[in-house]
Length: 494
Image 1 (cartoon, rainbow, N blue to C red):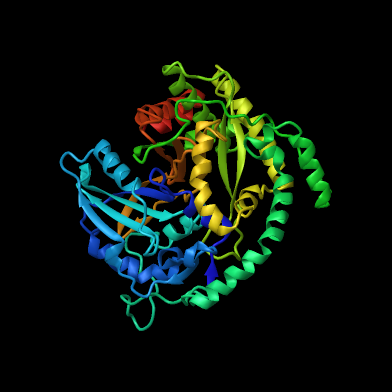
Image 2 (cartoon, rainbow, N blue to C red):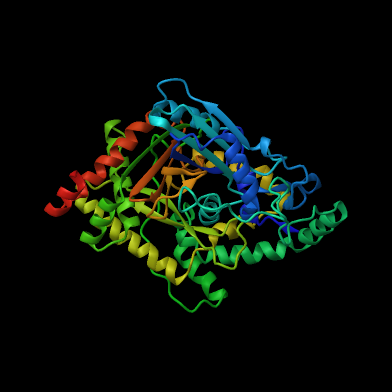
């Protein structure tokens, strides 16, 4: 029996009529040979579901919400509740695909079943197909999500079938997960709730002290008078010997895409050359992720300038960071976040690039000395019954007052070689994340795969009216930075 952590449960609590807290991805596949269809997908899923824990567990709620929920095997698992199919009308272009996927992405998952869906989308131009998959953030983070995806993919179009359960029988409920196979009993859950209720004040105090040690790195709190002194005092209490590098100002300015969001979503997706990103990174002595942050800063600056809404101060982005180790189970969240300013106030792209390199380097040094635990600690401050009631209201209040951050930017590393699903080659994979009141009306997520950097941009249309224009700015932002040598230019044009 496995109980959700406070961080896992926070992704459940944040959901409302305007917020769906799942992560997703849209794969574009070469399906011209007809091997990819719903029946083949169903067979593959049932073969390999035992390799993907997040896809076969359902939530078990504690009565009256007295404690955090549990994970348990779904005794009535039915692949038909999770695998769907649709066909786009002609011509099946990317705008039609984006509209169809955005509508699915806006819908919340059914909590009475394992928290995932997969949608096969036929009718794309050029003999292609789309496969949109979403999984609730309570069940996976970026790393476990990539592992879940990898369980379904092959290195060649004719790879042998994955090992299945039993004597070649693949259509049964998959094998059990140690610690999560049995549904907890009512008395057991109530007893656990009673123990957690009694110990909550002590655990909350411990979490408060730990979070206070990161006070100078927490959005909004970092700008309070005396935040740095309080953080140092808390670190003395916890006997932390190391001095933490200082951070720049983390005050997020107001922008058109910050504020209360609606329940609607718009989506844009596209790719740039990963080789170009690495070329810029090598030329400037920085990481590929730093270059991604720089082109995002340039694209956001251009989008805001077009609307005469560019703040004088830098924007502030939350950058998720994986904290997972190999021995941790592949379900739930083991993440934190770096909060970093984006120099959108600087007019010169090269200067923006250098400034991003410096600010990200400072954030990474701070994170290396003391990996930020404040995300999970803040989630653990309130008892479970209270968290579910107050979280949506707190997010709404943050949106109406001053945003903690302007947006989330996430870069997930992927393989630089082709992968296959049901024998069909995966051409691109566009990741998508969560839009919320507190974290901004737009998210930019990217995935490096097979020589390309694939962007998925999700926005609330009330906060960002033209998400495709932002994608165009992302492409142009990279072109501004690329200084190709002659031999590379000839290679790229051939």
